[in-house]
Amino acid sequence: MSTSSDDGSGRQLTYAEALREALYAELKEDPAVILMGEDIGSYGGAYRVTQGFLEEFGPQRVCDTPISEIAIVGAAIGAALGGLRPVAEIMYMDFLTISVEQLVVEAAKMHFMSGGNLRVPMVVRTQYSLGRAHGAQHSQFFPSWFLQAPGLKVVLPSTPYDAKGLLKSAIKDENPVLFIECNLLYRSKGLVPSEGYALPLGKSQVKRKGNDVTIVAISRLVTEALEAATRLSSEGIDVEVIDPQTIQPLDMVPIIESIEKTGRLVIASDDSKSGGLGAAISSKVMDDGFDYLDAPIINLASPDLPIPFSPMLEKAYMVSQDNIVSAARQLV
Image (tube, rainbow, N blue to C red; front, side, top):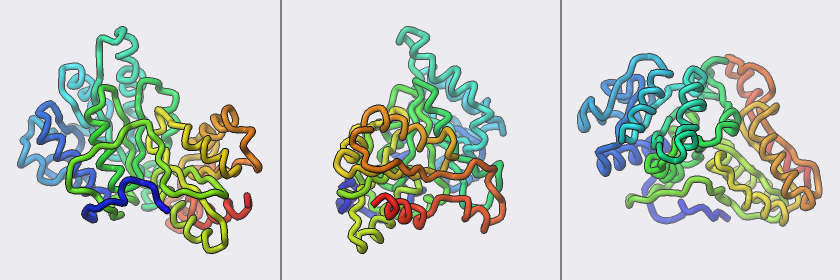
């Protein structure tokens, strides 16, 4: 049983189309919204999310930039401080490393260091390409790095419905938001209402109710967890699936409530096991929900190795639906 709000009437859109609708709607609604990034204008974006935007909104609002991530994020910060609402695109998550000083040291701290006088309403969109054989320098996923950047919100949508609703909220937010997409999800389809809507940041969502095992899944692994839950149900194992959606701030309430009911927890994320999201969530569970656990937490994550280029090795490197099924069986 799903409890997510994308069960209502709507059209089937891909994840990329849902992102496109959110950006288009915000550009139409608010003249302060601008887009900037490499190849987003005349080329229409590396994944065609912004195709046609340059022709409709012009180069002042859809800005092709030089190949310089620190310049892209720095310019976005300046635009946000100047009264605009920039959405900056970093083509691969790997390249966020070049702009970390601007994003973490500057944007995330300006509101605090100005005594609340300055606001930085900007979004940085990026994607991770794990699973597409792009190699060790174009496939990395390291969202947990930004858990130590207070003042920066971090969003990881898993469905087309969530992608549209969360991106609209991110653009309207008064704080800097890092919006991490998954390349493997761009062509996935789901129901997306035609009417406008927004989803709140900082709220975990119960995607499926269950009583035996709690699975907290991140980004693309939410779909894998839901499919694993369907397989497990035929074995009499009732799985609850929770999608945090926003990891900074991280809403632990539904997770702790679920563990209180099931007594068992599996965490599934594509980042590395050491210091990753699984470790961070496990720590919070040990602080607030240890007494509810009837078995050790199982943390499914990528091994602490560079990502292989070989498709076969990359597949073995990645957390799979089979891994999730095996973990749930082990706990029960």
